[in-house]
Image (cartoon, rainbow, N blue to C red; front, side, top):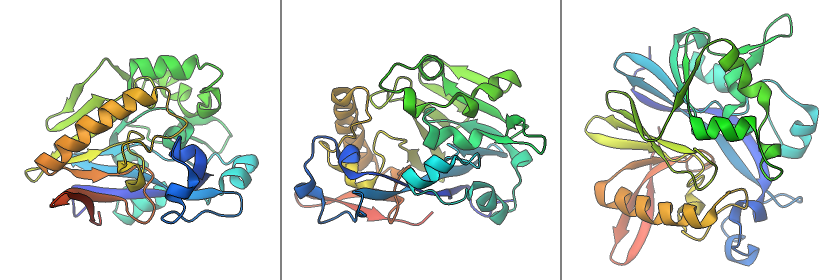
Length: 276
């Protein structure tokens, strides 16, 4: 069993276009603080969060997973999936996970939900888990429009429903005592962040509302967001609350820095990084 109740488990890294990740913010404003390769791609983490809640092992997001597509490996700079290895490192197997909470169903957050068995069949990676998704998110993933079609891959989530492991949510929900999801749907319909009370403090997995510490800048909103104005409003409100109440923030795509506290020196706000 885990020695701590909150731990980041990495599924590896993904490389995404820097301009797309920063949206309307021009490259001259961020290039001094972000390293990009010759294709203008920045390296992002694929961070999942492992929790122990009420004696149960809960996994938040699942990374890209092991169903590797050659085109993805080249275009996205993927490395072999590390999620199950990370779980093994804390003494857990897929059968030990009783709940999987998905911030949303884009392929870089839900790919690890399913795997190919020895016969080549798609099966849920976590055979005893309930998978929690917002109904609005599920509907969009099953019926994507032209703009978000490339972000959704049905093989990542349809087998969950076929095996009876899907649990659809309708709005903010307490999944277990002390474990809540809060809808923050600016990035995608039904996107949710995950909040857990741990040792008297709140740990918040932000999903793609604030994917990296660079996106603490309110105007840094990725071009992938379906409603950037909505994202802006949510970021302004939630980051203010996070600073006032001392939330520990976990960034789904943070690479060098994956978690930290928002603090202030005079007029200057800054992030105090922590390791999880």
